[in-house]
Length: 491
Image (tube, rainbow, N blue to C red):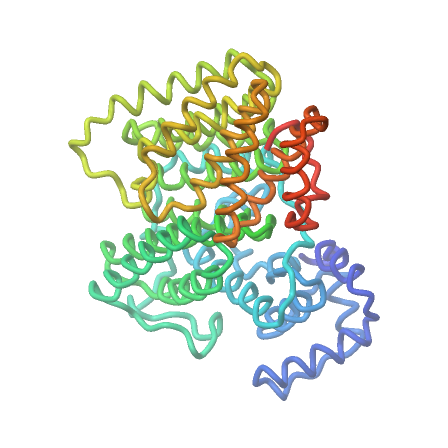
């Protein structure tokens, strides 16, 4: 950084309320606790870090990241503090420091998951950061995703291909692995994925983050290319799952960071469609948060990365676009995107085994997303409420066991569509079914959707059955969902 101020560090320092002398004392104390009792920092050194951009040597950046993470109650990495251990790279970067080198992806993954786990252990809530806009992420990733990964060229030139930089990682990091270990890791992804689909992200999120942290350590070693690609695939899958679980429990900035990490990991493994699906998750998150215009920007690189993907993958992406268009009230674009999704899904003859990360998107999920898009569009065009009901019924008929959370969403789409279509009695019946099942999950998103459905009951406040339903919902609706008002009329 030369003599330029470290504005990232200065901004975060201003949020802590510390004095420079207090931070120096905390650094020395924390360093001793982390096994570095010889470290001696003073006020003048802290001032140089902030005012002149001086970069401290390890382990100080990690010590500072730990201190800021605990103080601010959200994950703060060394890069968030303006300390980039890979700044010797001359590559063009933008936005989130894109593109990342492979070894940087592994380092960021390991550091971010470690900080996330620390927040969990200490009972802190990682909700203090802001999400990057979809436009920023889209601009940073569009061209980068379309290029081929170059692991061999990017990785450090090491005499021993299984060596790692001991100064960059902690002493408990994972060792190199073989096929059996990667088989087990891939199997663990399936287990976590099934639990998330059934009960939501709250109960197993820490386990997924911990597993991802271990994989980050493994990726600090140079394995044979075939194994390295498989490890990147595991990292991408676990990162998507960690992001989706974080989104499911309302840790939105944390979720977005995991989706970005997943995109990097998938690209390094040579799987651009996987990277596109990871970006589509971030887009779905933005629609849920009332930012559908930004979601559409993010879908551009997602679709671009999936041009050669199987039809079912592209069908899934079209449903995400449709939901975003519906949230903006863009009727023709919504119908077009949903039509594309149906055509693409039908074009999948099942003669090619889908990637493991696409097995969740079956016919039930197609109808579930169609129901959600039409239900959302019905707030602008009530004539499509009947189509939303039809697709929700078909989704529910096709749902297999182990998809309780998706069934809650289907019932809420159905109840909302009935209310929008002028059938409050059926709406109340389906809403009560959702209410009975929602307590079986740990998903905050289901409560957010319940709150949206609840607001639709306003127009029927004189109906005794609806009034009873409102009282039942009010008795159990969490405060965070009750006070949530998105920027668009539908979530």
